[in-house]
Structures are given as structure tokens and as C-alpha cells.
Length: 237
Length: 219
Image 1 (cartoon, rainbow over the protein chains, first blue to last red):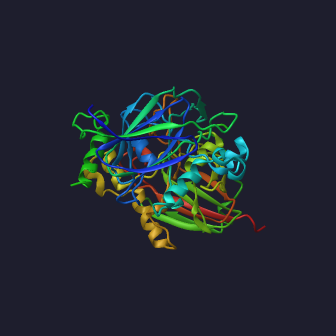
Image 2 (cartoon, each protein chain N blue to C red):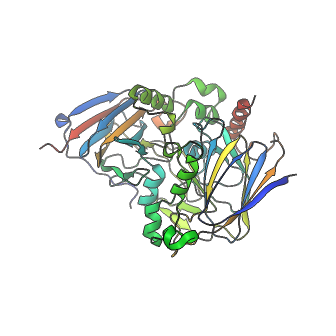
Image 3 (spheres, rainbow over the protein chains, first blue to last red):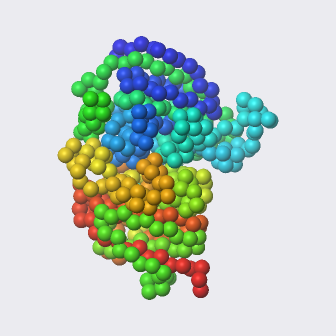
């Protein structure tokens, strides 16, 4: 696939990043060191009441994990992003965000005064502050995805975090199908059995991509996705 | 924690403070106080009851499906499950469950998702998120679409495979089965009795449910 890199930057561990990813561009996220966790949330920037809906995403594609070929649905039957490239094979849609109480309990307290740039941050607070910059807030924050992390569910319904899911230099690419407000946070996964606060950095790049073809793998993954793409195209007519 | 803990309740319907019947396709909103108990009864069997809970004094503090499943380390809701809010409060505890398994990943149906899941022509069929919207508009007090979040589906069976697959199975619920919850703080309860006809979540036959409320603070 032909593409031109328009922007790239490194996001350190524990940080929050946001951008309105335009239809016709894709965001590649590279796990530089291996073992990164990237919490992610998405909204339709043109109508922020429309946002990523996790149950619709899982049901339409009959999946409880996310990988190449899957798309991320909004609550309005439209597709926000497609997972067009993915060397990891499993991203976690179940476990949600780390929060202040959880991080303090796991890793102890480390304030700005004490630790400056190494202070303990958490994904929920990161997202709330970032959403605030767009006039949004806690009412707009719903279920999220953790890229690069894997948590399986056994027959009894118990959750099992799987370490070493993501190797160094592994990546995932999200193609925007709408003009999507993307929020990312690089704090550790809430279930990661790490002994210390040590979130990993990622490298981001934004590229221009070709229009979606009729035989696009995400579009043809299932009939549901074909309808989802049609409804997305309708939005832009 | 075990996947399914069957537990009956000692509370008697004749002692209930309130009793309501909610028909399929209708919303139902009410507040219960800390210490009160609410029972949802699947009157005719295999009926999905889409439910949301909010801190009655701060609707921004509301039921969080991801926090609830992560904190208990299990995706299914049953006796003993603590329903956790976005700020980490315990909203309610499930104190009795004669069905054994309830879902919180399957979400609520919508006219828009019905078009994706079934056919573009299905957009005019009724759906839970239509009921949620109507319910919160009638309730008022500032609730908007942005407040409608990932819900619980009482009596619904949505198994997840170890390989990361997800299916809708025939229900495990039966006529007369119920789930009972104790409010650990003042809570707004928002219910949509699911009208879905396109998949087996209601056994292709949406039916009424009963809501009973007891005040166990009063002896």
C-alpha cells in the first residue's frame, strides 16, 4: 500500500496524546521496547456525542479480542477506525483504564513534587484532562481499548493477563474512516503484574493512505462490516 | 470467583414496598435509597433486561462495566458481584441470583447497530437505546445521550471463548428466575426491557418483567 508519512513523534511512557485523525489518514503505533500498553478512546470529532462503542464493536464482529481486520464502531452504526496493520495479533478490549487508586495501590505514591517527570500517572486522569481541552468530560468517556495487551477469558469467565504479548518493534495501524478524535495514553495495563511503575514509550506516525477499496480486508471481514462501511460513506455524502 | 453462584432470597413479594411490571419495549427509571433492595424477575423466561445504574446525587458517577469485571477478575455477573462506578464506588451488590449468569459486555441494541448487524432495512425496528433515550428524556434532570453507557444485560448469556471469540447463546434463564441487588448508596436505576426480535436474547419473544423493591432498613 502506497503511503506518505506526514508526521511522527515519540510518546514517553505514562503520557497522554490526542489528535483529530482525518479520514484518509492512518496512525501507526510502534511498541519500541516491547511490553507497551496503549489505552485508546475515539470520538467522531464532528459530533462528539457519537463515540467508540465497545459492545457494538465486539458483537458486530463476533469477537472478544481486537486484531488486524477488525474495525472500531461508533454507537451510531458507523466505523471510526479500521485496524489495517497489526503484528501483535491480540489487543485487549475488556479491562479498561488504570486510575489513581489502582496505580497508588500497585506502585505506591509518587507526586510531582517528589518525582517530577517520573511522577505516577494513570490513564483515566490523563484522558479526563485531555477530554477537557475539547470541552468534553467524564460523561463522554466510555469503554476503552488497551492496544498491545492480551487478557484471555477462561470457561469460568475468569480473566488472565498474558505477559510478553507484544515484542519490540511490533506495531498496529489504525486507518481513520471518519474524522476521529483519538486519545492515547501509555500507562501500564491495569492487570500487568509489574513490580514497579515503568510505562513504556511508543512511536507514532501519521500517513496519508489510499481510499478504501471494495475488497478491503476490514470491509469484507464480515457482512456486518460491509454494512458499517456503507453507513459511514453515507455520513460523508 | 466462580462463574455462577445460585442464591435464593428470603424476601417475600408481599412485603415489598413497590411492585411494577415493565413491558417489553418500555423504559423504566426509578431511584432507590442506600440499603434498599431491588429484585428483577424474568416472568416468562429468557428476557434480556438492559440496565444502567447511576449515583443518584451525581449522574457523572455511574456504572462501569470494565471497572466491574476487572475488579472482580471475571466477566460474568452473579451473586456477590459488586457493581463498580467510574469513580470506584460500589453502587450495588448482587445479593441473590436464581438465574446464575448475567452479561455486561453485550451492550444494548440500537436502531443503528441493528442496521449493521442484521440489514440496513432493520433501522426502523424498536431497540433498547431508543428506550434509554426516551426514558432519560422523560426523567430529565440533565441526562443526555452522552450519559448512556455500557450496560448490564440481566438474564443474558454471552459466552467468551479462550481464543477470544464471542457468541450469543440461548438463554439460561427461565420463567420466575430473578436477580436481586442491594443498593450500597442512593442509586438511579435505568431499565430498558429489551424489544429485540433479530437474535435469541429474548428467545425471539420479548416478554414483561417485574420489579420489586424492599426497604430492609425498616424492621
